[in-house]
Image (cartoon, rainbow, N blue to C red; front, side):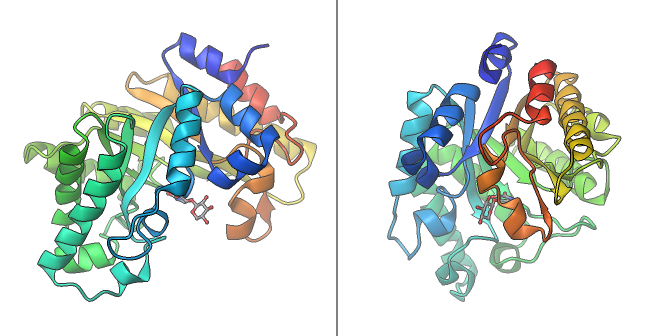
Length: 314
Ligand code: XIL
């Protein structure tokens, strides 16, 4: 049985993983699987603002370059992640007390430098990440609070300028089903389109809880595709209340299958990316108390039922 990426490629589909530069460098089993199984990749942390511009005007592309070199050597399509986000944002930006025009130029410079550096090599940029709250209202952030909602259109235009070849995307969690938050994106994207702002896609992160794939996932993907943009599952993981037993792992496999099939059923759903390679390094246990084992490979790089489910779906 051949790797996931071969089956995906045959269908013009992308199966991706979030990759961490330190593991790529220090763990050869991790790097081998990352390269052999996936034909797309997202930098888990290395292109975030705190990594690329930790202090004003001082750019550090060490880890981002490590990631890019790996992706290029392995012929992987890259999703840049992420240019404008309230989180993993250095304090010099968040607490800089910038005026509107200053913050706008701080944002523009950041986008120019980061998107400009990799221009031509990035298929998709997550230009703005997590801009709405669960009730569909705007999330307060230094960007929203200082610049108002136009920061999104500005960031999209600035990225288009810095890298005319990249597709420009928005990305968020808990917008997998139809709800107030995904409605907010639906409305914003229509607004952007009517203003002629470049917008190419919406990423559904899909950080899911075992047994809780939204029943209207496919319908939600379809409504965004019907706007004429692309859709992807960008950060898929399915977290289990630990310890995980066999029936949990089988439920998880079913959930992965459901997500794969929902994306596969909609023209315009172009990729599914899992948020990590093995359970061992997943962000889930650090973030969600008592939960874990959310990925396709276990702590020892053995395939889980979820791997087989994804394989069968492709
Ligand atoms: C997470 C990473 O996986 C962690 O290593 C890091 O400590 C925090 O961020 N939504 C996103 C991702 O868009 O960037 C986040 O990644 C997970 C939630």
